[in-house]
Image 1 (tube, rainbow, N blue to C red):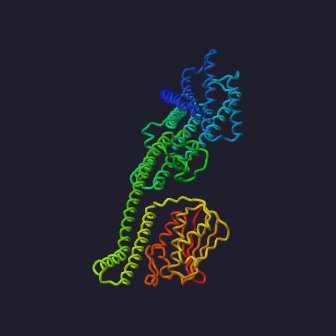
Image 2: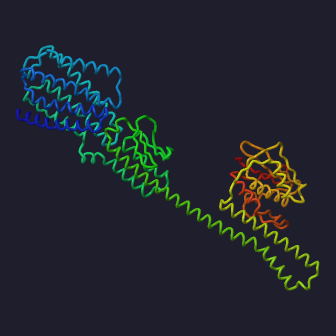
Image 3: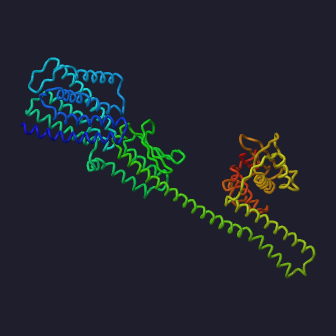
Length: 563
C-alpha cells in the first residue's frame, strides 16, 4: 500500500509541477487580472506539492517549521486565488466578498500563530482541530463558489470553452475532496490511495482546463467546425448579396464564441446586418479593412475561447472577401443592366423614329415627286396647296424629331437638373404665351400670390408647354393653369374644359404614342407629349399625374420639389 501511495504521490508531483509551469506561462503571456489569478493558483498548487515533498513529516528547527507553515499558508491561499479567478469574470456580492476576505485573513494569521501542528499519528489539540475545521470550511466555501460559477457559466459557451470551464469546475471540487481526505485519512491506508488518486485526477482536470492539448481541443470543437465549414462554403459559393453574406456568417460566428448576438459593420461604422441580441458590454471584435465583425459574448469568452476569437478573425477575413466579391458582382450586374438598357433605348429610339417618321417622309416624298414630274402642268393654286402641305409635313417632322431627341436624352438620364430661383407667375405667363400662340386668350393663369421657386426653368418650360399644347389640342377652352407652393415644392395644374380622357386609356395615358380614339382621327399629334412631360417631371425628382376634372375636363397635376 505504501508503494502505491508513494507512486501516486510522485505522479502528483509531476502533474502539479507541470501545472505550475503552465500557470506561469499564462501569467507571463496574458498580463491581465484573470491571467494573474489563475497563474497564481496554478503556481501555488505546484509549489505546495513540491514543498510538501521537501519538508519532513516531523519538522525540527526554524527552517523546517517555517517551510511547513509556508506550505500550509499556500494551502490557504490556493482556493482564494482560484476564487478570485472565478469571480473576476462576474463580481460576487459585497457580503460574500467580506466573508471570504475575513476567513482568508483570519486563517493566515492563525497559520502563523504559535499553535503546534501535530504530525501524522500525534495527538491533535482542540485548538488545532478548530483550526482544521476552519481551514476545511474555507476550502469548501471557496471551492463551492468556484465549482458552481464555472459550471453554470459553461452552459452557454461553445464546446471548447464549456469543456474547459467544466474541467476547472470539476478540478476545484475534486481537489477539495482530496484535501479533506488527506486531513482525515491515515497514511498508507486505502483511503490515502483514493485521496492521492483523486488529487491526480484533479491535477489532470486542471491541466485540461488551463491548457488542453490540440487533439483534445480539436475533438471538443467538432460541432463548431462542422457549422463553420458549412458557413464558409455557403459564404464563398452561394451568397450573392450583402444580406445573404450576413445571414450565412452571423449565426455561425455567434455560435463559435457562445455569443448572444453578432453584427457586421461597414467602413463608416454603418450596420450591414445583425443577428440575435446585440446589447451588452462584453464584446469581441474582429476587424478587417472595410469590415468589423462584433459578437456580444459573456465575460468568459475571451479567456476560455481565445482560439475561437482568433477563428472569428478568420471568419471576418473570409466575410470581407465575400463582400468584396458581392460588390464586384453587383457592379458587373449594374454595368450589364446599364448596357442592356442603353441597347434597349437605342433600339426603341430607332423603332419609334422609323415608325413615326414614315408617314410624313412618305408624304413629303410624294409631294416632291409630284412637283418634279407634274409641276409644269399644275395650276398656281395647286402648287400653293402642295407648298402648304410640305410646310406642314416638314414642321411635323421637325417637331417629331425634337420630341424623339428629348425622349432619348431622358431615357439615357442625360438631362441635367439646374435649379434657379425664378418668379413663378412671370415665368408661367411667358411659357403659356409661347405655347398657346394665337390662342393665348383661351388660357387662364392663376397664381394666388407672388411665388419665388428654385426649380430648373428649362424643365418647367418643357412640362408646361407640353401640357398646355395638349390641353388646347385635345380639350376645349378655357384652359386653366394654376400654381401654388406646398411644403418644399410647387404644385402646378393644367385643366381644360373638354370631355376628358376616355376611361379605357387612363391607365396607358402616359405611355408613348397613346392618343384617344376619336382625337387620333381628327387631331394631328404624335402621342409623345404626356410621356415627355412626365419624364421631365421625374428627372426633376417630381411626378405628373392625371385627375378627372370637375365636372368635366382633363386635369394634369405636376409636383416639383424645389432645391
